[in-house]
Length: 637
Image (tube, rainbow, N blue to C red; front, side, top):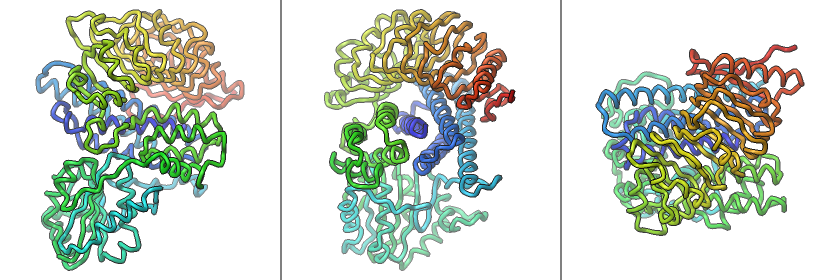
C-alpha cells in the first residue's frame, strides 16, 4: 500500500510541476501560493513514506490508502480545471474569477485532507515510539528555509557520487579569490540536492570555509522569509524588519568571512537579483553553489561553467539499487535479480527514483509477487524520460493542441515521447499514432466542435501498443463502439455518454487496474456487468454517474481492492455481492444518498459478522465534505 501511495504522490507532483511550467503560465489562472502549499504537503508525505514505509500497522496502511485516494482526487481536480481553461473559448473576467474561486476551494479541501492524514501519521508514529496517547504532532519544515546546515540533513551518499563530489569540491576550492558562483543543473530527482548536501558536510569543505549556509528556494520563494528564518535561527519570534534591513544584517555577518552558500532549487534569476547585493565579495575564495533544473538559469547565474548532472549508467544504477534494496553489493536472492534489474532499468538512471523504489522494496516481503506488483503499478506512473540531455525539449511532456505533434520535427523526440497531456481535438490518424510508438500516457479532450466524432478516428487508439494510461473527455458527442489498447492499466472517462452495454469493451481489457468514470461517462440507468469481466481491476471510481441499478457481484470484479463513489444520488444501493469480493479492503463514499450509505454499512456489518475485519468504510457527507471523517465502525453483534 505504501508503494501505491507513493506512486500517487509522484504522479500528482508531476502534474503540479507541469501546470506551473513557464510555457503554460500565461494560459492558466492559478493561485501560485496555494499550489506551492499543496506541493509542500505532497513533499512532506513523500518524505514520510520514504522513511517509514516499513511500518505495517493497520492504521498506517489505512492512512497510506487515504493518501492514494486524495492524491488521485487532486490530480483529477487539476486535470479538469486545466481542460476547462485550455479547451473553452474566451470568458469574461467574472467568469474566470468564478471558475478560479471554485477551483481554489476544491484545492483547499485537498490540502485540508492531506493535513489531516499528516497529523494522523505523526500521531500514530508518536504512539508507536512512546506507547503514550495524545503526543503533540511534529510540524513540517517551512517552504523556504535557511540554516547553517540543511534542516534534517542526512549524510547520504550514492553510487557514482565520489567523482561528482571531487569535481564540485575542486571547483569550489580553486585558487580564484573573487566570489564565484557554481551552478549544478539537472532534472528533478537526478540528485542535485543530495550532491550539494554532501559537499556542504564534507570534512574538507568544513575545514576550508568559515561559514556554511543553506538556503532552500523553491518556485514560490519569499526573499524576506528566507532571510528571517536564517537570521532568527529558527526561534519563534516576531520580526518586522524589511528585506533591506535583514539583508544588511546578513551582509555584516558575512563580511570578512570565507563563506559557502548553497541556494537549492532555484527556478529563476529573480531570487538572485533579490539577494545578490547581500553577499559581499571578500576576495578570499568565498563561493555560492546553486542547484537548478533550468539550464538557462544556470548559464545566467554562473560565473563558472555549469556542472551538468548526467544519469547513472546501467551498472551504477544496479549497484545503487542493490545498496538500497539489500544493503549490500549484488542481489542475494537469485529469483529477484531479473525483476530487480528490470525495475532498475525502468528508473532510467534517475538516482531519486532508484533510491525511493529500492527503499520501499527493502521493507517489503522479498517475494517475486510483491516485486512484480511494484514493477507493474509504480514505475509506469513516474514518466521518466529516455532523453539524457538537460536542454532537450523531450525532457518535458508535450501539452497543448494537435499542432504539438505537427510542429515537432525531431523524430527522436516523438519516438521517445511517453506522455502527451491536455491535447485538444486530437485526431488519431494512423499516420500520427505511428509517430508515437512509445507513448504510455495520453490525456485528450474534445470540445463543442461541428465535427462528427468519427472524424477524430478514436477507433485507431488500439494502435498505441504501449499505452498504459488514457484520459478521454468529450463535451458534445456520445461515443459508440469504442475500442481500447489491451495494454491499458488506467482508464479515465468523462462526459463520453457511452452506452452501458458497450462497457464490455473495457471489461475485457486484460491489464486494466484502475477505472474512473466521471460526469455521465456512460449513458443509461442500468449497469449489468458480465461474469469474467474486469479480472485485473483493483480500483473503481464513479462520480456523478447517472446509474440507478448496478447488478454486480464478486464474479465481475474478482480482484477489486478499492471502491469510490462520489456524488452518486440515484443509485439504489451498492450490490451486496460486492461485499463478497475477498480482496476488497475499502469503500469510500462522498456526498452519496442515504440508501447507498446504508447498503455500504450493511455490507460492512455482514463482513464483521463473519469475523472479517479487513474492510474499511469511509463516509464523507455533504456537510463535512471538507474533512476526513472517521471511518464507520458497525456495532458489534
